[in-house]
Figure (tube, rainbow, N blue to C red):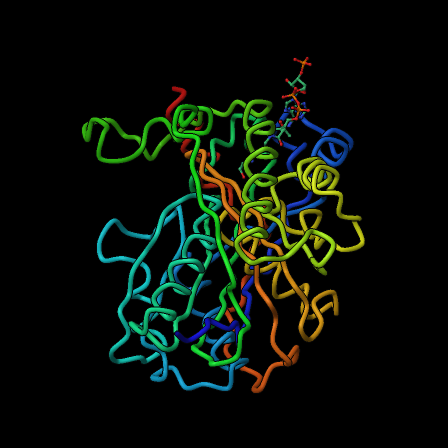
Amino acid sequence: MPYAQITGWGKCMPPSVLTNDDLATFMDTSDEWIYSRTGMRERRISHVSVDELAYVAAARAIACAGLHPNDIDGIIFGTTTPTTLAPNCASYVQKRLGNEAAAAMDLNSACCSFLFALSNAASLIRNNMMKRVVVIGAERLSWALDWTNRNVGVLFGDGAGAAVIEATDEPIGVMSSKMGCYGEVRETLAITNFGSGFDRNLDTYSHITWNFEGQEIFKRATRGMVTATEEALERAKLSIDEVDVVVPHQANLRIIDAVAKRLKVPMEKVMVNVDRYANTSAATIPVALCEAVEEGLIKPHSNVAIPAFGAGLTWGASIVKWGDRVTPINECDIELPPCEQSALDLIQPYLQTVKKSAL
Ligand code: UT7
């Protein structure tokens, strides 16, 4: 049975930065509150579609693996904020890459979308159904946020990351996964008025609302990430002391801290970039993986634990044995179109629709 190795990694963060002070210009909040409760300093706001962010991240990951787009036989796109209901986002990436034959599928498990997509890709490869799969986590949450609700408005950002997973005979790559869901508390994190369950005559776009019970999510998130990591380690026949790096979902520095303490892993082994990008949902893990390699935290042969949780409340973890290579084979010169607008300019249309719906 082949193994499923990560051979390419890429990210695409939109350039416009929204700081905590920017948020405080239109919301009753402060840099002090946001930073002390979440560890977040700033987030990115996208001027392009989530598909386009994902395409650039995927192209970079494919170049990093030294492959041509036509070498890819599967694209799994994890997102909660697809550009269209149909067609799916993965088919957009396939078309933009110029790939002619890859199966293209989307997967929505909120912030666990990338992790679950990675586990699925590994299964497809291990069962000889595919050889090279691009796994994407990308979001344009700025579109879906309720910018009148400070409980959620400060927590999220936009971005994309991708990884190439390839079949190999060496015993490395995705060694195990544990995936679960606390469905009984699914309403604690919910977008409450968008989707096919709602009245089409209502102008839902004008004001999307969220139900968000932060403290309940916090408790479940910690429990789910710890349980999943322990079970995935057992399946991979590794102890926690053999883990070199933890790349957790980046929702809140306090959650990351609590998970590290419960697992008894020192914070020096934990990848953190929530300060720079806030919570980009499906994108946090592939972006953090990419930066963990770039910053030298992931080294050749590192054992990497990847725990996540998200709306649902989905939770899970994978254990990855990294290969020999921590540098890209090829660089990629594909870039996003330039952006002339500030992040505050970019969210103006969303603030306007909130005002309209309040009339
Ligand atoms: O990836 C999945 C999505 N992410 C999550 O689900 C995150 C999970 N939860 C959390 O990260 C934390 O629960 C939060 C960061 C959301 C909130 O932190 P907390 O320490 O649980 O704060 P809290 O909800 O208990 O609120 C404390 C106070 C409240 O005021 P009172 O009632 O004590 O007067 C809130 O109204 O802070 C107030 N507050 C704010 N103040 C300034 C809530 N949001 C804000 C804000 N700015 N943005």
